Length: 209
Image (cartoon, rainbow, N blue to C red; front, side, top):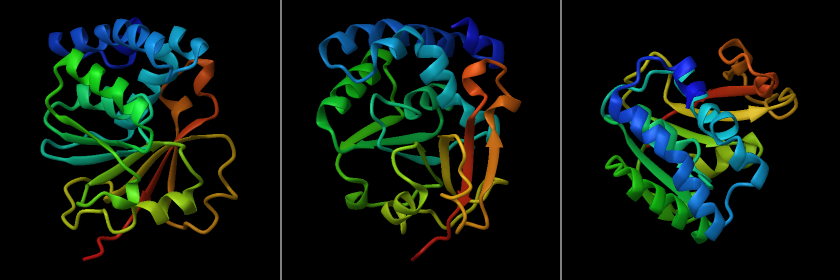
């Protein structure tokens, strides 16, 4: 929790309480349904919570924003961002039901009212979103194919509507066909060694009516 406050010192008491509760909720539920590796559960705030919040160093989501978290797994990046942006709506989607069981229990335990979950492949999700967020669930060409047609028309942020993707390593080959991407190095924001190769990729996508 100290790690979160180090980089996000202006949290409300309610946000601090919710972030603090995350550890016990995940420790408890991970014993019943394993969604986070044992090594990672011991470093939950470093490897999952703060990593998810890396997106918040790139963009400050406006109230009313709609976000789709694709392949949310155990609820990342959606749940930490939903705590940080309580006036935004988060739709967390995964094709594996047992993972969403954990997500639903964590959401209930935190009394988060701005999160809904759907057990589905993303291609079957209807609706439009300001941004589609995810943590490296597929190579970018595959991911773009999955989410096309899901971007909202109205632009409310300086960053154009599109994908915000948490990725690591060398992305030059994967992104070579996407001229409009911007890559943000999380090592510019977080000083821990874990973030040396971690990035946020922003890929604007056009509305398709």
